[in-house]
Image (cartoon, rainbow, N blue to C red; front, side, top):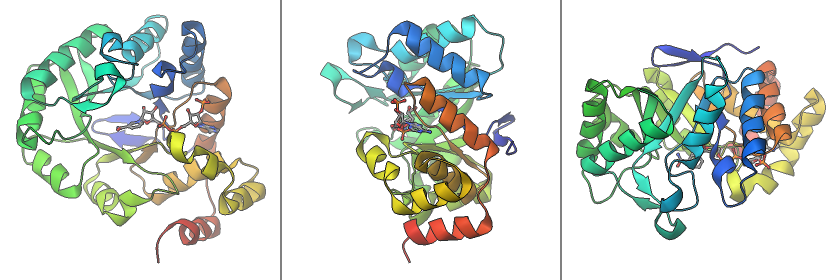
Length: 286
Ligand SMILES: NC(=O)c1ccc[n+]([C@@H]2O[C@H](COP(=O)([O-])OP(=O)(O)OC[C@H]3O[C@@H](n4cnc5c(N)ncnc54)[C@H](OP(=O)(O)O)[C@@H]3O)[C@@H](O)[C@H]2O)c1
């Protein structure tokens, strides 16, 4: 088993679960969604990523968080639940809503949906162009001071935005898109910054998300390494992300049990140095 990774003062397993597909338009039944969450915990995953807006529209806010609460109510496992605030879903669209008053109301709603007195990790979903970032982060600092959230993270941010936020309050995690076909955290410096500062990096859409999932599955370099080590191209993609930095924690989404089992098995895989270099050449510019 690969070693656990630090998220603030908590240690978590190197692969988390992205719960978003359990609440999308193509969501599974509640029983099947709970089975996916149970399978993740049974496989040793102890970080679940969610958001108030993992739902189909504003009338359905908190759907994903309520599912997680329903799963955890039946179990005694120690799990870090990472949720987010700062977006809304009017008529199913994704819009910004990170004014301090909106964030405080969103956090209270997440506490109710998660049936919790304190959120383990509360992430700003994305900076809001209409609100100074310092104001949004200031609201998170107030929520932390009030004991409503244990730790603060950011998502969809640049190095300059992380540094600004960190001048206001401690930041334990950054969550940006990262997969072999989108290695932007390496080229924009965010991953290097997180590595140097010991800040956890939650890699979202790590097997391509809905846009690049199929391309990852048929990428020749991932298939070739997979043949060598007996792994699927998706597992090789996750193993490569893990090999890029000790702060990376991929959070693959899943609505099927087979996806959870496949991703969790990567916690027992390690790329050889030569396969890591081979994949770097395939996916990194220069
Ligand atoms: N912060 C943000 O702005 C942001 C944006 C997007 C996502 N996220 C977070 O990141 C998580 C993951 O991103 P994502 O769901 O967009 O994309 P993803 O993790 O790349 O996964 C896409 C799909 O790939 C399948 N899959 C996952 N692991 C697999 C494996 N080992 N083998 C084969 N297929 C596999 C799953 O299909 P099935 O559904 O069929 O099982 C999953 O729904 C989300 O759940 C969410 O928590 C955050």
